[in-house]
Length: 169
Image (tube, rainbow, N blue to C red; front, top):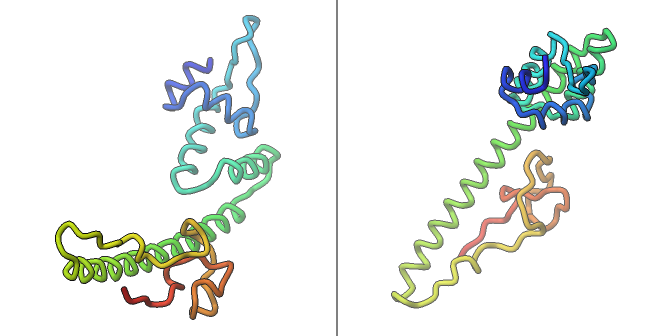
């Protein structure tokens, strides 16, 4: 099967197939006399496996190690399960972080409502200036919670809103 056929059958582009080849996710197919790739009949199943794994959060790098073990006759099943458990724990942390972020945003929104009630129409309320300063320019998801939980800036590892002290505007 040629690359165009495999791409159509699996719903990926030929560029994606070549990318998978470069990463070692798809074995390099033999070439025809016209230098076309000729994929073996098992290729659609491999591409589908890659696509399914990507949909549940596996990275291409993780898949590379998994399929390398499989291609050598090994059984990476326990490793795959451990990776999945780790992803679930990371997701749980991300959910906690998002819930905390939502809580902080709701508190900030209430503070802004109070500020706007005290601000005359047309007068600048400086809402964004009231957002507390942070040590980092972005929220990092999946990191560990701050053990101190007293002051956001006291923990270099933690970049979550949940470690911010409560603030009044």
